[in-house]
Length: 352
Ligand SMILES: *Cc1c(COP(=O)(O)O)cnc(C)c1O
Image (cartoon, rainbow, N blue to C red; front, side, top):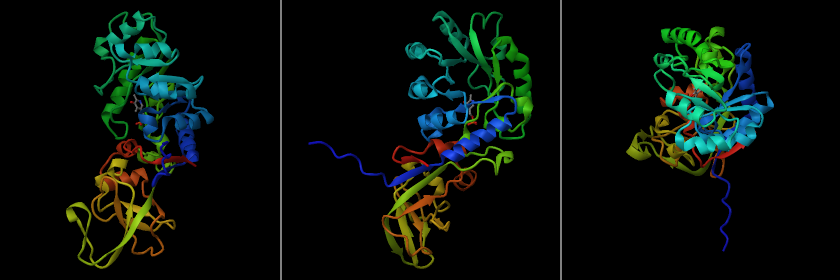
């Protein structure tokens, strides 16, 4: 007996390829004379890294960043002759994969990694210097004479801790980077993520590395109105029901109807990345844009919304879930990054 192929999922992510490409183009423009790359780690921030790479290559993106070698393997052939760098460096356990992917650059973060890469015969690589975030990267105090000797360094980079705020650390990091980066003698320097691009020219150097804003996130006010929504979750109505005045909805009975109301039960929940922070505060959208407020707590696989104003919506119909990142972050209390990267595996992802 052969198993049936799975039916279409009752939830979809509509992914706007035009918005994605235009967001990247705007970031490339804002990057001035610097080239603009793309962070496609975490499966393209939850959208699907392979499709994101394919879309961005069409508009001229020549530098891609992933976190791990497993992610590099997944996108390698689609990156083609563009550059691909692995941000988390190269552990001993990664060396076999690294050798099998010539040209893919590890971002070397520690003296031990530098040694490992050099001992293995090297090849093009990047170097990350920590300039005050104290996350990954070479400690500037640990840069001894000869540390970088014999390396074929493409890009020397650092990462900003507070680029989405007005914070004195931004200027401090740029200053430290400017004074240290040249010691490593890379071909290119790179400091800015999405928010860093908006801090202005002195943060751009030769290459920028946006992620969030390509996918529709606005980390600073400067990008509001220029960065457009890419991800639109849609869920199917499984049941329509009447809630009488005084009755409750969902776990914890946290919603209580003030009068008779009509509810739609949608096939989406926190296991899909629609988190409990949207309980009693998020909303879905009818086709004409009418807001359909969330009633009660978000369940693992289900969500109840108020459709009292939409008598025509019923079982089998689809509604959009409001997911503009700037608004959804306020409504849910989750960061724009968490909202994107939590989107689960049960959606049918459809590029439009
Ligand atoms: C994730 C990441 C980026 C992209 O950052 P966004 O804030 O998403 O634009 C750039 N550089 C490094 C080192 C990263 O880890």
